[in-house]
Image 1: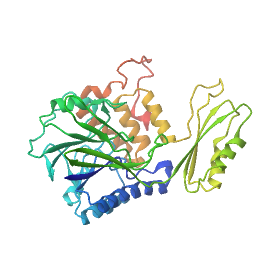
Image 2: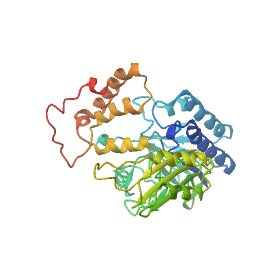
Image 3: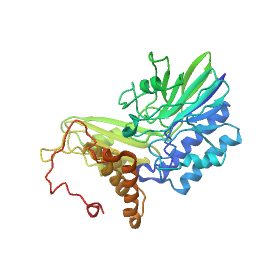
Image 4: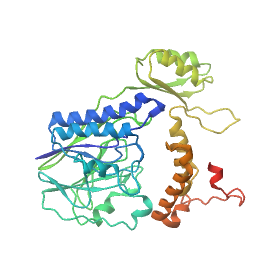
Length: 395
């Protein structure tokens, strides 16, 4: 029998809501996973990508990861992992550093055998590279074979990478695919091209207000068959308060409803619908925080006045910006520039050089496709003068 703990999407270094406390919550959740692995005496911890939230973690984030990996190392529990899209670098990965320190094993095309199971890895592959990608794996002699990978896979909802194609083209028959990227835990068994189990472990902490379900990981046992069990984690509480305001109802009703919940040290997400009066988020957030909430966000889903068609969400400003960027259908190059300037921690004096390096990297990897719109179904028509964007416009 071989039993492993399947985790992923730990997103170390994510300072959600700009709070250092939330950054520590992500590290604490990963540590809880490691301590559970030691308590259960599993044969390995298998991480399906996005160990870090971005490709430039701080020294503090790296040291935090090392402290957790040493918990596993002290218990002689291997840490097997692949690289996700958030943390992927152009050349050497952080996972490679941990491997040189003897604290991790980066899975790839050659099998890593534990008990009666051969483990393989497939790092996140950008969409532009998938058509020409060769799914070649070295043979094994184990009873079971497992592929660990990171991406949004079909036939799951929102998938853009067909797991069945990988299984058809692979020269190894896999009994299970242990997956990361989708933060919602879900499992299904394919009927073709083989009876392969596909499972997402979900994230270890809530990276957005849409992740309402309990956070956790999978325990996967290989004995006669593949057995996948879900286990939850004790993470910071999120209190979701959904309020439908009737005509004439407003902030007083919202405050009353918040008062019905224990919000001490919790992240409070208030979602408003209905025909009630306008509610000012700042006042509601201040009220909840006076009740002891760590942080509060108000998401008013009602239609605004006829003066504007813009939907405003206060649940997560960073997420709102990311969603708007996606709606614009920008090319890969434009998205790289946006991420460097808006979302990264690059010092102002280094922005131009960093943009130049990232653009060169994308062009090298994707060629002309890097300049194509993200939307394949709709061609954007713009005035010639308006389409001339220079580096100075971004800086």
